[in-house]
Image (cartoon, rainbow, N blue to C red; front, side):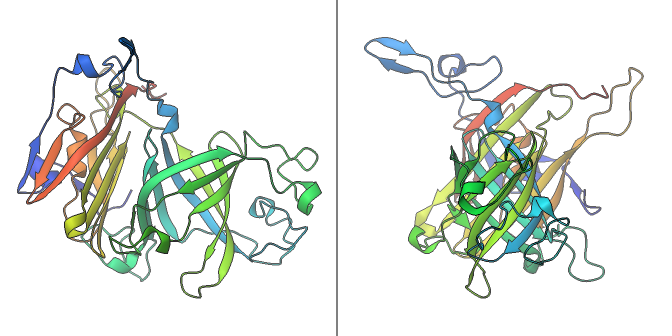
Length: 361
């Protein structure tokens, strides 16, 4: 948590001075399952009603990157893939023996697989704040993008029979689940102005090797931004528990979107449990924010912690992002809208489910 975070104390603080909220709330019982979640409307076929599939909170994820490590492309035959899980004991390529992480990278992926990925450089100069939270400098933004992710199980391509590679267990090359091929569309990308043809945005895909229930090793390839040369990379990701925000006993997944092609404006906000991230682009100008719900550190006579608060930890840019709209779950309904000037954001996803209580309660 950055020391210069801001507490959200009023609607004006988090929505903006001239923002207005419009909630669209028809007879919800006719459209949604209202026990623990908000789902899509039921479908009717041949005069019979088929309940819509219930959203599965296990499809959502809060992922923090532990490191990124660059490798040659193509990988020489016989080199173990994944490579970094064997460091520093095995280092056939004689590269840096220790992976490192130059950014604070957090990815929020909704139940319907809409994600916001924000990568903020760690302090560059002496005296820089841990995270930028007052609009800049832009140079602290390494990358931001948002879109939709997909994941398909695939045979492990790096077996001993193919390249002499091996996994955590050299005898069985066993993983904690299926190896998958994941891909991420870049509907918004801080490196490409709104309106850039999708054919000009590089394909983003990788193999994902599950190491344990919360860690996955990503292995992929991409062009180096500065040299234009292809290189391989490995990234370690750790999933965080999705929590409710006191005093609520339920967790929320909420997605907001704006799309104004006539003025080249696109934006997405994802709130997942105790985190919220958003990005907005107007042409090539980007604004990003990250918020975190921080629990109170005091306890009442019954031993319960006091209610916490939403705190902003990152802000780069000067555009308006309605992250604060997602903190008021009662008014943040499917189809709800928030207007700021001529811009209108729409709630396109809202799911609520019971969250396990913390161990310290």
